[in-house]
Length: 187
Image (cartoon, rainbow, N blue to C red; front, side, top):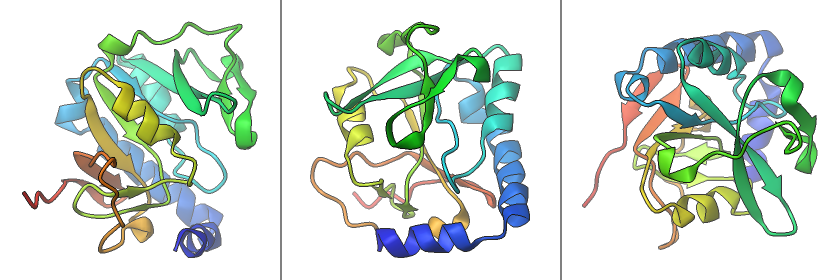
């Protein structure tokens, strides 16, 4: 399923993907629950992911503190750093543009209000399928306080149900180019 969804996402025309990314950023910037958050961990777009750079810059203009994750492969974890603009990025693990620790300040985890979570597949129940290495699962489970969790994807990545393990943490909202919706609670 992961391979199929990544292929479908890659097959979307670049201009269409760009338009969808713009729609996504507009929706995210007008989302009241996120607007109330001061410190937001996001991601820098990789391959055919949503291009959220417009959101990153606009949120910073609004005075939000944006963090981006640095992948520490040997330790199998991510560490967030304060994003100050593209000049502080370097190409890191898996070819992803990440904060350069020599040019960045680590985020103070108790301050984290929201996490924008990328992935391969999402469902209406808060389920998420990542890229398979478990970095976000480990990061989210390590936090002492649960921030607002928003899954970020194109609508074509939303499937009826993602297989969930007992350790998986459900997301609070799902954001796509069609808008933002709360997860459907089953308990």
